[in-house]
Picture 1 (tube, rainbow, N blue to C red):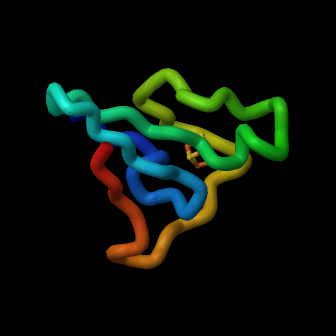
Picture 2: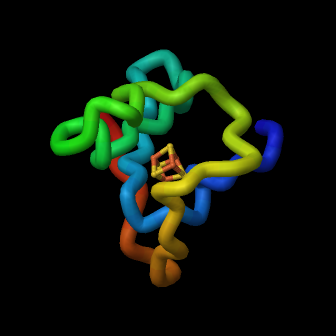
Length: 61
Ligand code: SF4
């Protein structure tokens, strides 16, 4: 996958579908309409970016 800010952002939730497709869900979208729920990737600049701590994200569905 192309590197994206979302990958290291504390506001992202990684979604992996049953078919193995990966999506980034921006949790800022729930409180701020400027952010799309599923931002078009890759994100190279984002005013809402905040670095995450290692190991806090990742979820399979
Ligand atoms: S705030 Fe920006 S960098 Fe962070 S998950 Fe949302 S779109 Fe991606």
